[in-house]
Amino acid sequence: MQLIYAAASPFARKVRVLAAEAGLLAEIELLDTAVLPTTLNERVNRANPLGKIPVLLLDDGQALYDSRVICEYLDTLHQGPRLLPIDAGRWQVLRLAALADGLMEAALLARYEKAVREPEQQSQAWLDGQLGKVWRALAELERQAVQLQGPLDLAQIGVACALGYLDFRFADLDWRATHPLLRDFQLAFSARASMQASAPV
Image (spheres, rainbow, N blue to C red):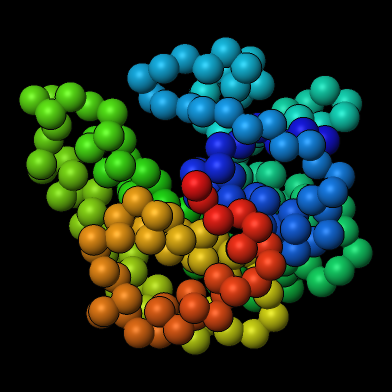
């Protein structure tokens, strides 16, 4: 298998962390690339018509996207405990994982607004709207932080990667100051070898 990814992408990091935790990372060739909404990446576009990463290229020629689909696929390939439960806890994990994905998406869109668009084209209203989603997601994750305890699962991985992206691109937000339970969760989770190895650069 091959994974088209970018080191700074929180969605790609989520896949890499899950693959490492499932013992599958050695079976995946990592293909680092860069993707911006204003620049065509033909390799990515051939594999995913949406032009987004990550993309998992299977040995039979199929391409899987997006990160949620890739994570669910990889979770079927290992012999350890499922990272996406198949019992009654599945929906709770999926809901928190979706919240983490939404946080990542909003943060990424805010990043693009500031880093890709020319200053005269930037919209403060758009930026405020995306960051509003980030803060609301953080508040809800703080409220549900107890659900991030227990055996490792996809929600924990997603939340940790989302918070890591905020640290990487939005350090000035200082989300830890008002979210102590998430702060403690992130401090512990970021010490895992899979997180250390996938830290964005």
